[in-house]
Amino acid sequence: MLSSMMRAPIGDDVFGEDPSINALESLSASIFGMEAAVFCPSGTMTNQIAIKCHTRSGDEVICDQMSHIYLYEGGGIAANSGASVRLLAGDRGKISAEMVQAAINPVDIHKPSTTLVSLENTANRGGGSCYEFADIQSIKEVCLQNNLKLHLDGARVFNAIIAKKESPKWYGETFDSISVCLSKGLGAPVGSVLLGTHDFIQKARRVRKLFGGGMRQAGYLAAAGIYALENNVTRLAEDHLHTKMLETAIAKKDFVGDILPVETNILIFEVKGRYTSPLLTAKLKEHGILAIAISPTQVRLVVHLNISPQDIQTTISLIETL
Image 1 (spheres, rainbow, N blue to C red):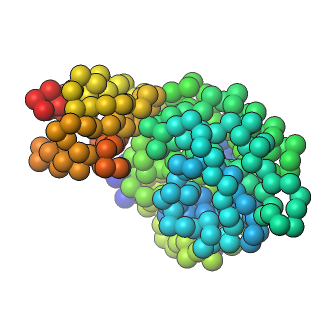
Image 2 (image 1 turned 180 degrees about the vertical axis):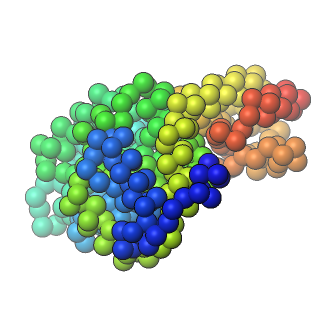
């Protein structure tokens, strides 16, 4: 990847003259069978651009209460788009067509206009949980019947695709816009792409500029994204296997309570007894193992391509001593 970055031809992306960024956008769109794409510094930006393109000030966005767009994007839905949010209590970050249907506001001047549904796949706070694609299609039908747009926060969409043996083109046929992060399991250092129709992406480029996301000679970063898409997708299955191995080791400990079902590369578990989550993460850090205390009682471990089989065995050996 680093070698590809060093060899990348570059230009001015704001003027559409960076050949590496153009190539990344074309590749990303083609993988999902969508018309166009735009490269951005972060998944937060691609999500926020999509929301602004799909809504007007005063509209309402439907999403799960644990969605990244709501919890971890700095209040951007309100600040950037002037939209409100209808939060749904889904199953490990996943909502259903029935829940969406019930949450759509009637035509009433007292209520915001429901215009957008946003799904997250895989769901971070759901422990990397994956939608069944049939459930996504059911949600799409509700959106079509009610003239709503459907956005995908696909921060880990390739993890879901590999775990569920799906095709990226299924997603391209279903969603109005898709955010794909290149810097998580795919291993690129920076960046996400936003996918949609030509008209949508033309509008998205204007919003990217408004948000300060116009980049110049950023082809070095795009080259990393190209390498990631061409080389690091199928190997995600290895991360999923490693996460299951960690789950097996963690489940044996008496200080561990509930463990969210492991489907992909995220392990979230409850700690109790002699540990709090901050104490356990501090203990792990003493041995060079980095984890996050996502609540006073929950720890999150994430596996990625820089975590080797030996790293997994080292972590398991340490867990056994705790």
